[in-house]
Image 1 (cartoon, rainbow, N blue to C red):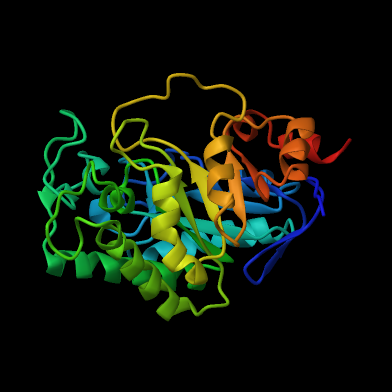
Image 2 (cartoon, rainbow, N blue to C red):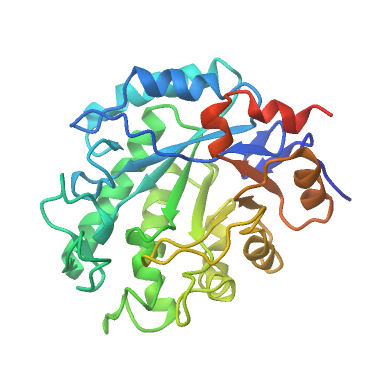
Length: 325
């Protein structure tokens, strides 16, 4: 059986009306305290009409983990109500909405972070500086921050959660051997490096239950020898597959290294490589901007859904072009 962009798909218990997803994109419009604003309500609701799912920009689980000084967060109960206004506006367009939960770790904003933290005291670059290596007690504390963020996500009306384990942020930092040189239970083998992700995922599942959709965003390659590859991700995610509902595949961000060439659908081969080994839906993103290309990708069963990002910044109705012949 083959599919097109117009066919529905299930992400866990959630039925999506088509296979075009709005990818999370930073808006840089949060308040100094990390609260969402009227801009976010207008921005996301305006783009929700044609896509099957909206994924909100990276939302910090910790005051110490915001990616930018104008990030939004969900690290206090007071953050819930502004976010609820976003979910209600998107739901008015009959579209579900996920929140992307993140912690910047060594790539958190120096402008708002008291102390950069990471699995190991290895700097991303000179701008960010050297982070503090997390103690076991501090790791448990961050796991609890993720659990509380998940609880607040449900209260805010989100239909699911995307865990941000890509682009060099804290979950990614634990997973890659380039940023994690620990010698305890959270470092060394791929199983140990995935332990923090497992702890976070199970804590969230304990809070939201198994029927609530939880997906993960990954960077399938670190663009350097010795870094993570799609095969590494499969090895780490397979034991957790029963707790996940989809894999959203991006690339890079762990190091200040750019891909050698950014071409049409340049990240697709990495997503397709992961899809060969998992039974949950795989989402591809990255310059997939035409209906014919998206349909060919789905018809060839390379992935299960396509996410679009930047075109929606300029044209809120861009997804309509992918759905109407």
